[in-house]
Length: 381
Ligand code: HEM
Image (cartoon, rainbow, N blue to C red; front, side, top):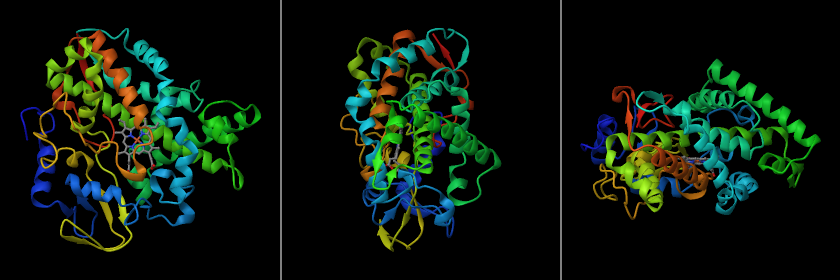
């Protein structure tokens, strides 16, 4: 633990304890195996044959259409290929000016010197607006998109392994109906955006089915929202903990990319993921049986002292920075360029406008969970 992470000392001390004493260990007898060292997390993410992403315990007929995040090759390859062009750097860069204009608009009237919720003001709406525009649904109600995404994301465990809450089921049904209506409209009047192009895509069996299209819409809306909110709020926490980091970012834009990489490492918004073993396998001297769940603790790997010099200190120009915050291997974050771009723009706009960002109430800040906090009260000056 260091003096630079006063907000969540226990969480990161807990990860360190695991790395030192039980790098591959079961949460409880018979439970999933948590993997905490960088080398082992990397090994799990790299080996998709042994560590499958088909983790659900639901019978295949009840799972619905697979999403790329929870599938293995060849299904994964086919699904990823259908959308990968839209997320390539040159496509994403074209959105830069529009994202910047949106961020400016969101923060231009924020009050100074009094508590304001940065999640509601910027960190939640910006990513929702960006993905909604890519999907061609920017005229929809952003607040509703966000509620759907929150309800489904916070129930992801139950959705995969048990019975989702009534709230999550209702959100999923409403979201599906909304997108089905959009899909019908677009079929009638073809449009040139990501969803329009997916609808027009020719496949071996003709066109993508409604269920396949819905699966893309759900994944893209959910995967990119909570995590990007997490990156923007992580940056604000860092400005609070290390006030000297903010002013230089206003002087020199070139510092921002390395700042974002370090923020991704330091407060990794996608703190852990999940796999299931397809065979018995030894990891760090421990035998994991076939069919068990494995939790690669990305946030712990990103604080591993065997890889990062002074891992608990935030180094604005850390280089190299081989963090795993965006994953590794075939499931490496599809939205990585977009996430980095949104993060850079949000930080640039905040640094341009404010010389100080403080948390209004340190005690109420949750950090290190999956995704971003629901609220982050800050005082801007
Ligand atoms: C700071 C923001 C983000 C973080 C930290 C993040 C992190 C991650 C991580 C760690 C994975 C790999 C999960 C695994 O291997 O199990 C992943 C996959 C994915 N991400 Fe992101 N993500 C972010 C933003 C986005 C955005 C903006 C989008 C799109 C709008 C997106 C779409 C996806 C998709 C579709 C996958 C699945 C890729 C596949 O299975 O091949 N992400 N993300």
